[in-house]
Amino acid sequence: MSSWLDRWREYFQTWYDEGGVEEKAREAAEFACRYIDGGAVSVSGGKDSMATLHIVASMCRGDVEVFHWDHGPALMPRQIEEEILRNIAAAAPKARLVVRRYSLGHLEGARVDWRPWYREFFATLQSLGYRHHILGIRAEEGNRRRGRGRVVDRGRWVEVHPIYYFTWRDVWAYVFRHNVPVPRVYYTYARHVGWDRARLTTFHDREFEKYGNQIDSVLMWRDKNYRDENTAKKT
Amino acid sequence: MTPLKATFHLRTPVALGFPWIFFDSLLAHVALREELGERYFALPTKTPIDRIPELPLKKWRGVYAASASIFEPETELAVYQFYKRGDFPFPRGKIRRGSGFFKDFIIRAPYVPAHRAVFYATGELEEVRRLVAKVSALGKERNVGFGAVKGVEVEEVEEEWGLVRGGLAMRPIPVRLLRRYEDAAYLAYKPPYWAKESVDLCAVPFTHVELA
Image (tube, rainbow over all chains, first blue to last red; front, side, top):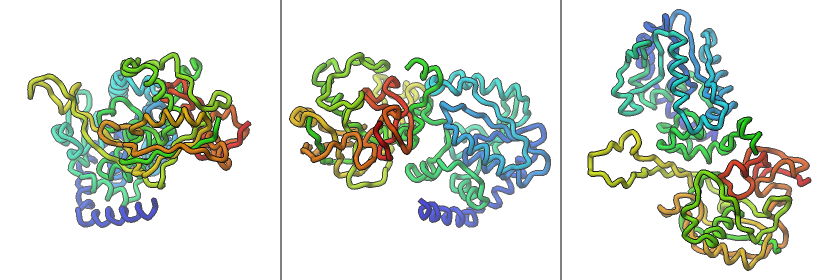
């Protein structure tokens, strides 16, 4: 694992210089810093949001607020969630971290019915009252994201995407050059599906079945049979 | 009951839905298909059926003496990605297949490019031989060619290795049946393996255990 990882680290380090990632990061910071006041960096813990957080925390002046949504134990294994919180603290030690947890995220049903998730998530965003949400969304990720643009006015808040023009190579190059901490599970997935396809989403989530998450059952088998308290009582 | 070893010689790699295939689940599948005939394909999908056929395998405190798969030679997992496109009876261009209800599926099939899948068990040799002869493919995505079986050999071995071999659990064993265990996780330990009713805190296959 380590020699494989070392080779890739070397590749991304080279790409950092050849791909002009330093300039891209500087431009992204300049863009993001305008929105810090009254806004928050929304961090899922994935590579894109962690790179965005690192850019903002290291290059912007002023207080940085970080918002993190905890999906709950059924969707996000606790060891990964704990790692994410540690990573956020390491990447932006001075930032004020606001964490909200999905109230149904401890139930097995959260893996099947994601509608309550959306309702609660957006209600939470509204109640927090941030004017700007700084997100790690990139145009390269898909047509829908490409169509959104770098700044999206959602009515109650504005979404800002500083690393919008980064490619997956740029993000990994930034992560490796600046030692931005990302969950280790990335390396397991990257090894099997490739660095361009390795993403951090909720695990064993029916919502992502169409995107090939069957692989979770093999790579994350230990968390497949999640048992909430209700299930444990019944059986 | 005879201690036995079943070796499946494979023509193509085995796609997996879980890191292991369980021998008792394989036999239960064949026995049930044999018993129900065409009705097997109309079973309820959301609730486990009320009766699993009696398998020709030894049972130890409710756990079949049948191991999880051992793939030979030991190789690293690979992933094959393909798209599952719905065969819908709609005129071209009338439905959106890029998003929404009819969206095409990405299937990421993890597979093991192994030559053989080996299982250990204790059971009725002839009956096991008869059942395994009906297995034409192992694992998932069999309809696209994964896991094709070239031939099966069932032979007698000197010791019972269906549960434990050299101190290692050969299958998930509930920890309540163990005196000591090295590693545990919530795993299914009896057929049907997909049902949550079959799940218990079990010793992880191929880790050190001591039976109680």
